Length: 117
Image (cartoon, rainbow, N blue to C red; front, side, top):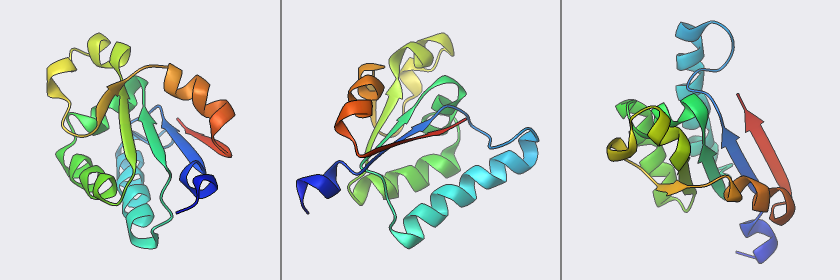
């Protein structure tokens, strides 16, 4: 894999539900990660922040999908401040604790930064 491809996309996930309607939004989140896995259109790094940290801690179904993506080479980080705010520091089930430096550095190091949430 070339270095350009390696730094193609940083995905910042700042929610645990896509859109205003929470019930369907949670279904959409699951579908989003399943589609990434199936199509192998995977980002280099996914950074979870705000309520998005629920996806790396509380949502076991999504944790399972994220572990599969991690096995495919995706780097996964969760905002340490957010984990602390929600009382989830000890609950991280996939990836690593990260900082907003991942986002700031990503804005210059990655070809594309995509925000969801």
